[in-house]
Image 1 (cartoon, rainbow, N blue to C red):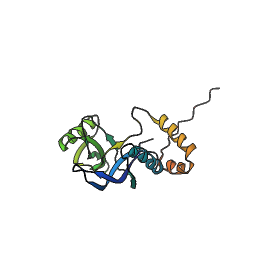
Image 2 (cartoon, rainbow, N blue to C red; image 1 turned 180 degrees about the horizontal axis):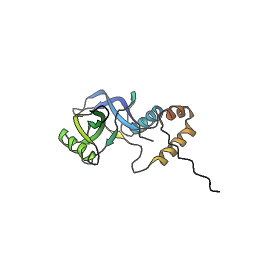
Image 3 (cartoon, rainbow, N blue to C red; image 1 turned 120 degrees about the vertical axis):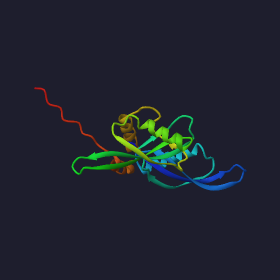
Image 4 (tube, one colour; image 1 turned 180 degrees about the vertical axis):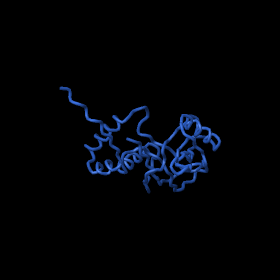
Length: 185
């Protein structure tokens, strides 16, 4: 089961450096199984940071293949990575683009971090673009190296408490079936 990231835009009253208040809308990323869970998670996460009233104005599935936080970095950068493959039938080179969200302090560091993330890649790739992302913060569901079993347990808990979200979640899930074991006679 792959991670689905949702970009949530939150509108709230923010106090600036001069002490004045203005209404601002900022995007955040949350790891969730459905739109319903994404809304619940962003409400929970933002309640810890914003004491006043806030409003979620938009939730959409984010187009990031991977998210890579780095220590001592405070901004998020969107790295476009083009994977290169040679098609032997047509004799042409094909590019497949994917987007990574990489944490860094500037564009050069974002390039270096993207290169370090891609270091283990067997195929050829290029990095045609890196730009600063408007994403303010990322809220992953798991803090450690939990795997699919924990995600399944989370799904089952959600299924029991919010049956209306199950159909939406199942639409986003990828199922793998194990080969049937041979009977021992």
